[in-house]
Length: 265
Length: 291
Ligand SMILES: Nc1ncnc2c1ncn2[C@@H]1O[C@H](COP(=O)(O)OP(=O)(O)O)[C@@H](O)[C@H]1O
Ligand SMILES: [Mg+2]
Image (cartoon, rainbow over all chains, first blue to last red; front, side):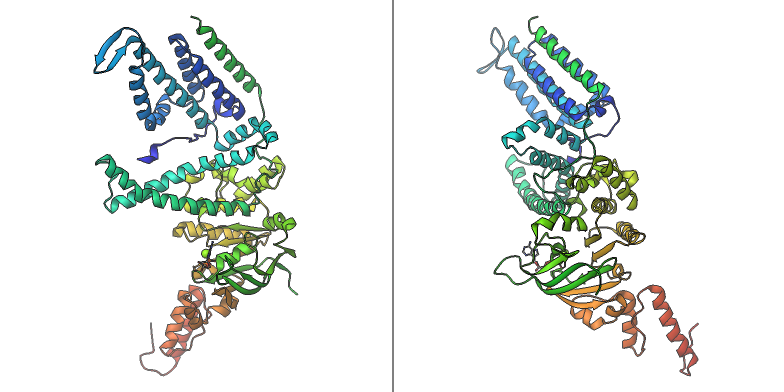
């Protein structure tokens, strides 16, 4: 059941989006998120949706894959939708006890859900099309100037790439432990919330203990391969901006400009 | 005087000041280009010894020299680590990147090697362990044997002179074990890499030039496999079993035969037994004839 978590996963491919420089894609995501927060009407949201669909087509990632990645976040989406429903001002359309639903509330709710969906899908498109190493390399280069302020950018980037590398391994391990506990009669799927929470204890303890041992062994293995924190590393794959990167960034600027203009509509 | 790549002098090591010595006076020379197997029961100090070979652990007393450089010298540490590569038991915990070729590139990247040279080293290392076709795969989707071969490639890309492997096959199924051993054997061919193999499996030691048996932090036995394995009782007292061929010959001897015990492969063992039976066939013992 945990196997279908695609958080931070990378689907190797050869599309235009795959070939973009990771720095371009990171800047794109930053631009896209900014645009999402600037968007304040249906036209602007329609544009953002169109951009996302276009981007996923260019990346040859099917919308279904993107949406299936949303599943673990469904609770947050529904929660946000319900809360925003009651936050509107103006003529009440419906009254439930002390809560009132207004046309404004429905509008807010729809926009908020769209905003979350687009934001998460935009971020997923980045991780789906960029190998974790390229991603952290790009981040390291973009944040490079912070090194002057003694921020350990390289070390943070290394930590992030290792975290991404171990997500699938830890998911696999969690699954294994869950199955082992199930075969001894543990029940993670039904029962009262308190019971289910209790069933998690024998799952989390071995997972934590295992993670510490793992971290220790990994650190030793990295030392054996001459890793020195803060050392001067080179890269096998050197990042290079190409024409397509300039083009992509120009498109990003155009999207931002369009959203700013649409705010006046 | 032999040409030793690793040399330990009166090496003692304790994990903390109050506890007993896990390594207790080890004097050892690993000859350049040799294949050394290290055996010993759980907790005898094998892994600890391995970690002193490249300065992951520093001696509490005595010293360890790699190509003549003291592992305790911080100036030489990177040189030492680059010379003596290390592969561990659990392949999952030594792979750092999410793509095979990126992982193999990790060590040369740390050493500041130029990008084109890294590319060449990575491709070469992956070919040597037969994983080149998997260079763009995600490591977590590979089998145990494949992961372990990626880990070996990751060390090879560092271009070490010696590889120390700490039970590299302990977590693998028989197929994975065979793959990894085949990779080890191909390292020995050609360039004559020095290999130190720590293992639990007697069969893996048969091809070693030298066999070291550890017990309680000391070297208990040291010699060629043909010298060490026939000492069956001694091995048993150290918590180890002789290879099955030797054990068979030994128990035949307990039943009145006088067979030599240094037959390590099944074929050698069969030869020894056939020869013995042939002799008995020639003798006048009744019922000695076997078709
Ligand atoms: N990190 C550690 N801290 C304290 N003691 C340890 C540590 N690692 C191993 N030991 C102890 O050192 C002894 C030798 O362990 P080890 O070298 O792992 O043996 P082997 O690899 O032969 O099984 C054991 O008694 C073990 O409990
Ligand atoms: Mg060990």
